[in-house]
Length: 426
Ligand code: GDP
Ligand code: IMO
Ligand code: MG
Image (cartoon, rainbow, N blue to C red; front, side, top):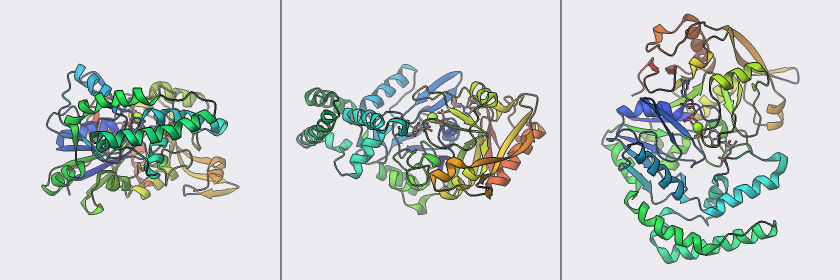
């Protein structure tokens, strides 16, 4: 089958953008299915860096159609700004298609995100404050506003006025500043004309491409451990980053899916709050953060860093039905004398091999480590698996054995060509 889902196997920022960009040279279509501008996917090509939030990471290929499907929550001003920046960088954005069924993030979703985090205080999620949770909440409450609604102006206006009355009531009750409706109406009256050329019934487009045997890549955002069902709830995002989310988020049936490729860093990072059993608070953690430049693509926040977590990776492989694993950022371990892998957790004197559902248990889990030898040279110039130093290969082979998923590709740098194929994905 010629469809491949690429998902984050950890807590996001695994290098999905880089891998999608690499694989997209062989694809006819790249589809974003969930999340919104909370995502920050980085593509580096010929020394230029492209930071993508809503635009799919296949945009550098002018022959690939890039689709923002129904499951994404779309911040239209943010999307247009991103398109403008890409054009300034000489990238054609004509291939973009935006689902008429996608829900929009509106200014009040930002206010609600901010307010909800404030109210939670020390229990805050540490969201990206891009209005993601409130937009998905409105979608589930059936008061969301979709892209299609922009093209039925009286309907849009009525819904917007109704929603803003409600949100302003809430803002007022918490002593916050209210939002004025008229400027929002005015802004969106203009925005809808700028967005009109891109809108489409994307499920129809995607299914037609699949039916005609074209290669279609589904680009996950966030990661399995941030999934609203399978992640470390409530410290999660509000969508379904796992592979299953692609079916609802793009409108393709499960029978149409070929492979599921999970992207994992050679270590683990997390931004925002929530449990993270292998987090390092010492100089090793700082060394990873500095070497890996682990600062958020969307918010600039320092990412929390730790060793590779096998119970989490195995769980992620299971809930995604992962067929292949891609390990990124192997180069960050250049010069490390030793590298640790968390093979299990210790909880109340017992060994746990599975990733626990209960957050209180997870918070008290202590990682059990296995130590592997590091390597002295640099892997950044390696282009074939056999060129990697033996300890690096031993590390990757131990990861695939423990995670019970074959390593199909390895990334050894941020540039497109710093990628090693071990077994073809498509
Ligand atoms: P995404 O959200 O999963 O697309 O990942 P991000 O773009 O947020 O974060 C990954 C960061 O690591 C980006 O700055 C990438 O350019 C960079 N990156 C990806 N793969 C590699 C790699 O193998 N080595 C190095 N050094 N950097 C990488
Ligand atoms: P990409 O696609 C890493 C995290 C936030 C926070 C939680 C909820 O670049 O991998 P939200 O704004 O979604 O309500 O925040 O999820 N988060 C991410 N962490 N990478 C991302 O995206 C993320 N998107 C959201 O930091 O902990
Ligand atoms: Mg990111």
